[in-house]
Image 1 (cartoon, rainbow over the protein chains, first blue to last red):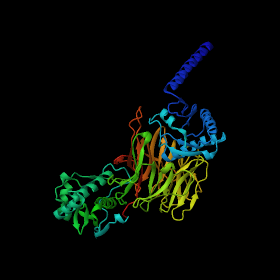
Image 2: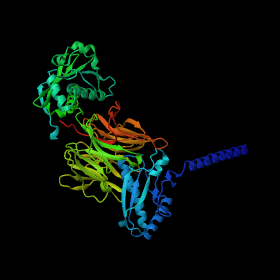
Image 3: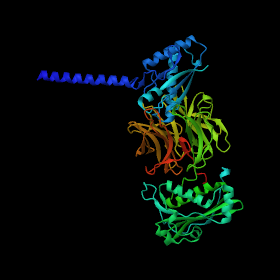
Image 4: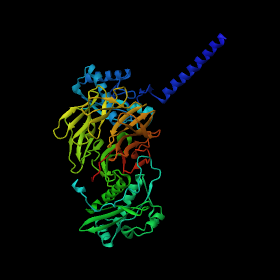
Amino acid sequence: MKLSKILKNGFLIVVACLALSACATSKKSTGQMQGDVYTGTDTVEYLASGVPDRVFFATNESVLTTASRETLRKQAAWLRKNSKITIVLEGHADERGTREYNLALGERRANAAKDYLMTYGISSDRISVLSYGKERPVDSGSNPLAWSKNRRSVTVKAN
Amino acid sequence: MKKFLITLIIILIPVKSFSLIEVDITRGNLNPLPIAVSPLSIDEESRKNFENILKKKNIGSEISSIIENNLKVSGLFNPLNKDAFLQEPDIANLKPRFEDWNLIKAQALITGKVSYMEEKLRVEFRLWDVLAGKEMMALAFTTVPNNWRRVGHIITDKVYERLTGEKGYFDTRIIYVAEEGPKTQRVKKLAIMDQDGANNKFLTLGNELVLTPRFNPTSQMVTYLSYFRNLPRVYLLDIETGTQEVVGDFPGMTFAPRFSPDGKKIIMSFAKDGNSEIYTMDLENRIVEKITNHPSIDTSPSYSPDGKFISFNSDRSGYQQIYVMKSDGSNVKRISFGKGIYGTPVWSPRGDLIAFTKLHKGKFYIGVMRTDGSGERLLTENFYQEAPSWSPNGRVLIFYRETKTDSKGKGFSAKLWSIDLTGYNERQVPTPTDGSDPSWSSLLSN
């Protein structure tokens, strides 16, 4: 009885593992999201070799992920090396929100990036912030992956 | 407003009789009132004169088609097919043969006459109760010929008011954002049109992104957001003269503008350092006041019609919800507690309801609730829709709806829609291009 129970549980665990790994692989294959934050590189451009221009956010969030902080540290290093360059941080939201709230959310996301760059020594004089809300998606799809690419802050050279 | 001046002469006072026909507009109207709109009669000389000036073969029939279309779109009336009309328009206007109109099941009848008088357009019309065999109303207007469409709208307003007991909303305009181009690079222009989609005019060229135009309830001014020189700021536009100016001198993005009910202030959000707060600016003395003070996003403000309260949305609870406060910013109270995210509150011109956008389980809804948050009622559900704006009588909402794109990101469109407060009579509002962010004007003639 005990044994059968153990076996049964073991079987369940195996099934659960299979289900999980199926899940994990399917997530990887549809691409490039962790939770609902975009982790791919399809839309990413480079400010310089090895310096990605953008960071991505979770739905309704403006918190920087570990990957976003790493990208911003690379940007900060590049900006310190090129001290004449000024930048605009363009904040964006996905289409699943009201227009006015998304304008505010884009501004909040771009400012999250700005604050982080400042903690790595980039003067606020060199940074301006511009929110586009949901007005300038990079991906015109109406699906979670497209939305994840659109929730972003993009660093653009201003001079 | 000078341009729109209409001389209105009442030639006959409605016959002393208690309201005969009545149309109930408080419930969804599944049995619209059968009404016959007899083409306005016109004498041959007047017809020729107007054909020369307006390039319309028969201005009488043109005006009655406007009335007919308005009545049909309202959902409260069922204009009957003209082919069944037995009586000639000119004779019907003198004295209807009620038994003939009764035969085709008309309960109400509109007749009238158009004439050319000293370069002006003169229109008289009468509203008849067919069952009671009585005249309910008779009015005449004299105006410049170019105003002929407005005459049709004003007549509809008079008929609507006489039969429902409430002011109409037909002699009004809609300002909105006309959109074209791929979803990733939409070109947006301010556009204005009559409530029925006629006389569409573009007010900007599309060189810069423009969003969220809103009418001043008391004048022909509009406030909107423009990305002119890549600086998103609230602007003021006089649609008669075309003059534009930035509202205030804010060191950052201003957005979500609306007028106060007296038209003297603009209320809007100002975003700085990742925090959006609500401000007002007095348009006369330019005094700026900060209304909210909270490290969350506070936006989409809208005044109550008496100017004493402001509704807005804020994510101070973690997600976007609707709040109401006194107009000085005190007594902030959350009013939305249902499941989901709530935004874009807009106070009804009647003062009793707030219309909103709601997102719940991946669907967007337009709904209304009482101003204390009770009595939530969802009117329509879709993939994406938002930004309701009230008709001036508070009976209809106009909003915009966007389509879901296919797996290749194709098939995007944005259209204007309207729906009655009852949740019935949902209709697409015709626009020459795609459209979004509609705002309904007050009645032009009052």
